[in-house]
Length: 102
Image 1 (spheres, rainbow, N blue to C red):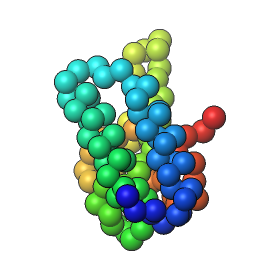
Image 2: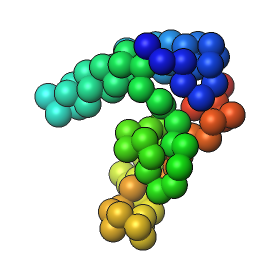
Image 3: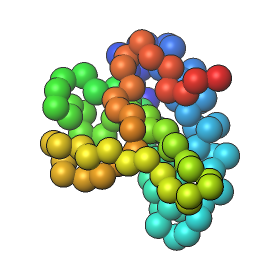
Image 4: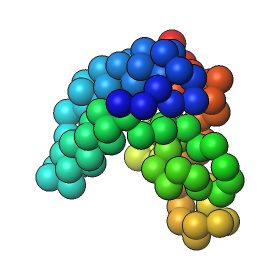
């Protein structure tokens, strides 16, 4: 396994992300596949942070959050102009940024 851009700290971050991902109870088969692929990617030792724009390495950490209006049964999505998709707000996880707020 490679050490990644942060050296030894990278393994601690990977362990924390692995723990968080394992807490997800998949909604369906597709989400179960996404969880499995994410865990395999983390275990591979591949770099987890985007090093070079726009997307190098191709697979890298991003973080999204979901704003839910429970009264009107709506969620907030934003128009991502580069990929032409409606996505939850969020973005790339920077090298010195924690992937989750406490």
